[in-house]
Image (spheres, rainbow, N blue to C red):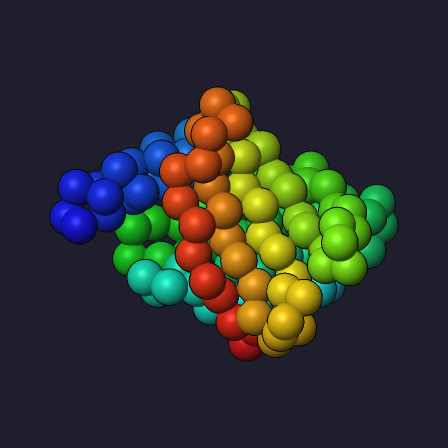
Length: 121
């Protein structure tokens, strides 16, 4: 389990240090706020001016801020996708069974690294 946590934290810490800062302040409004397993807090924002989607994640493993996300409805559930290099972050807004829950998925080179259950906050 410790090895898994290390490999999970590694891409987030690397990306937090090298990613460009996405702006989420008075120019953006929050559209989704979730709390995920292992202490991940994720907020999705939409820029009022240009509609850009912004991703903010905070955890004990570090913080990550990304921009230029996409959004699509898949099987009745909205998914927000953000890319940074070879990593991709998917945040599912609800599930078919429970609209108050969701999922965080992290991919590296199109292979899943992590999948965590979340709940809307």
